[in-house]
Image 1 (spheres, one colour):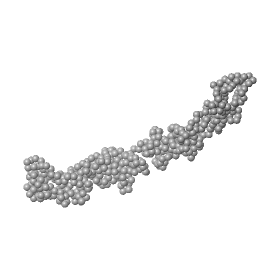
Image 2 (cartoon, one colour):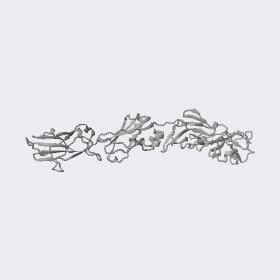
Image 3 (cartoon, helix red, strand yellow):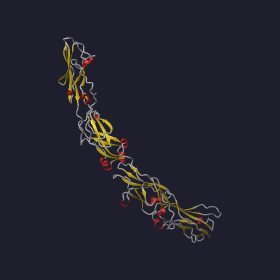
Image 4 (spheres, one colour):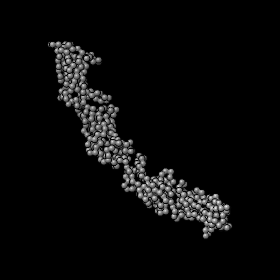
Length: 485
């Protein structure tokens, strides 16, 4: 089949080069791949529309590469299709822009073809910067100081972003091939990134994803790349960027708590033996980065006595004091104690928690006193209408603790009397810390209540103290005098 070009009926169709790459947006036009320059270049000439060769009046075709005739054929009979395949010698396939055309001379005169412009690029991309070495885009100083850590990946979208220095000259279709090596220039390819037309102004980023990083393990790693242009020219490998990787999940040891008994995560603190200050210590082998802040969590939010210690004890960066009232508030319960490293991106890295049982006070607790009791007897006839009750101070006493005092006894008919509430949810005040509760004779048992009780029988004053509003009550020693006439 033959035809004339639709645009200019005076020109024959251009020659065809099957090896040419298809054009892409923003890419080089009619680009010849490098591999096609390694042997003679095949050219196909379309059959021209007017051809009447005969003996003595042949059709003559000349193929031009730029201005040089590189092939010539003539026919004195019908032109067979296989005769329309030509080649351009290898020595002509040098780098640069070229023109390919042909002329056919026959009985009707000479007819030229359209020119086919094509491009041969044999120059590999030239890397920029310091031999093209990748640069770290985000928090490079952290990588320099700490290496590539799990914390870094967590804070940076689970990837390490690097930038390719500007190279000469980016063109759509360039492919950046990047590597992550155990040894320098091992060429362990990670992936490929094709530069699109919209990308050629840069910057060019390479993101190394955390999944790949974790799969390839910890240790020194070498990050580099090469650029292959669309023609197939490969640049030199970039200078490797060395990164120390320790991206496995960071694990912390348990916190150290002074004055405790037990092993591992099951510990016991006896309030009877407590000596202040009580310190919780972050072990020296816990990896904490310079820009991280440490704190100790005593209990959990919502627990009685929950406390977050953020200031080191007397300038010690890894030792934290727990206030006595917070310790006492956990009396009789098991609380969780851990330390937390907080990064600059507001991520928390907690240690495993210790389960710490706070055994309640049972020693040196004061016994409640009732005015008028002598030899463990109370004379009802000698008692005033309002009988003062006092309670002395106790270990770990602090304002904000809660006290209940009540009286029980037997009725004259032998049944149990309704308890008499002396104090209910009484909150310890700062003044109570000096001499105890009831020093102003404002805490009393009413004589009228005692008059309902059976004589010559013991009645009892009970005391419970809660070291926090929702804390476990601690029973103080009872006072059980005999009620006499």
